[in-house]
Image (cartoon, one colour):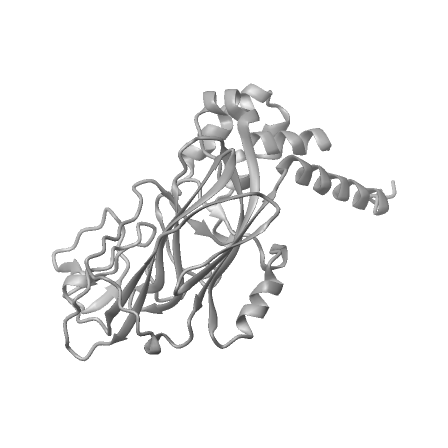
Length: 332
């Protein structure tokens, strides 16, 4: 039982924490992978944003990374494409090859339509999972819930994002940006958007490429601020002018009377202010780090994580349960 479960761990690294690399790289660099559980809190500070007197420059540039990953709820996690019977019959080399083919065959880049369990509003644009998503931990697995409660008790602070995930690092390897959409939603944007980048170079490093947007009700005026970039992990809504209905169209769909949302409809909100949140911090594990900004506070913690140890604990618990409740044999 233990051997089979450990082999499943070796066979499916893509689904344990979103690690993606070629078969050869998996075989030669598997020992170089270091896992951490990352927990991140982003919160608004400074009280009522309408009372904020600081005005930021409006000639800022905002962009998302070309290579990115999504944070997704467990309900949208890709399913492994290998059965227990297939795992039992595989050697380690074959297991690695199958893991790579699982990643290639999984249609993660296709849009995923919103549902009641995807963690987003039902009328928001469809989520594009993308390659090797990072799977958010369940609320009961998070360690900083007490800090979140303290923040929420203060009227001058408001939590925009609280989440955690298991993250595989290869030292000095370039990491893809992690897309962040947090806070209240205005039309099809959130008040805090952008990306973060995590990397391991002797120390752990966090770099933020975020922007905090203040919106106002649109009474027909034009905004002096640049257009907000569209998140790459969200699909643009399209309107079919023949029916005047909104829908989320696929990449390969084409219609005679369709036009991009942003160029047609007057938005309900306009941008009133945009504040860049661009910081870089070097950190150690097993410490809670606070990064200050005039408008956004950041709490982050890295905890060493051993996926193999967790698999062993699950197998032991499963075996103990089987011993306590042996199968009842049917009478002859």
